[in-house]
Amino acid sequence: MADERVGRVLVPADRLQARVAELAQEISRDHAGQKLLVIGVLKGAIFFIADLMRRLEVPCEVDFMAVSSYGASTHSSGVVRILKDLDTPIAGRDVLLVEDIVDSGLTLSYLMKNLASREPASLEICALLTKPGHRRLDLEIRYVGFDLPDVFVVGYGLDWDQRYRQLPYIAELRG
Ligand code: IMP
Image (tube, rainbow, N blue to C red; front, side):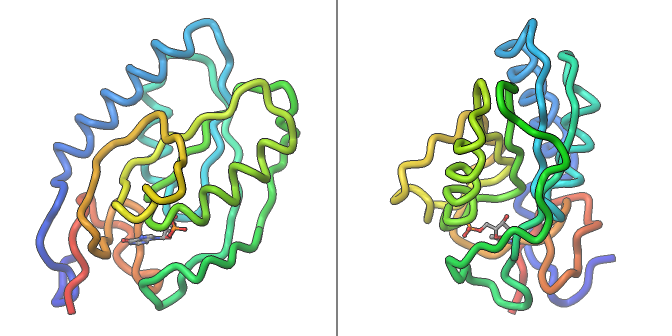
């Protein structure tokens, strides 16, 4: 389905799947004996969450939040709005917040403050991809799939103007 806007492949499908399996193993090991509440951020994280959860070896539930995204822009505005909140209360729960990509980190730091105020027993982040920008914010991201350079990427859930989410790999957006 590639077209002229889909550029260089940065993470091919087989490397993605292998890394997701490793992350699931690590998370399962670290959380043995717990029941996890996996929270996904719509829409970008759905492919990652679906693959990750199928490989988790601890009992887990899933819930979703939706926050405002960039639209057709490729830069974070820094303004985060909750478009859909969780269905489940998280007080006393072991929560794993799963993000597709962390760029400036503004979305994630807003979400972490918001979720921490609901008093979960534990709250950790798993991000499939990170870009260098967030390092200023001192966010603790416990599980990271891949560190990317500072380029706009699409595929495996990530979109540009709602397109290219279904690509099975991560590619650079061209032009
Ligand atoms: P941040 O607040 O700058 O960290 O941006 C986080 C959100 O912006 C992500 O959850 C994505 O929805 C979106 N985003 C950031 N970088 C990219 C990218 O390279 N491709 C597609 N979406 C991105």
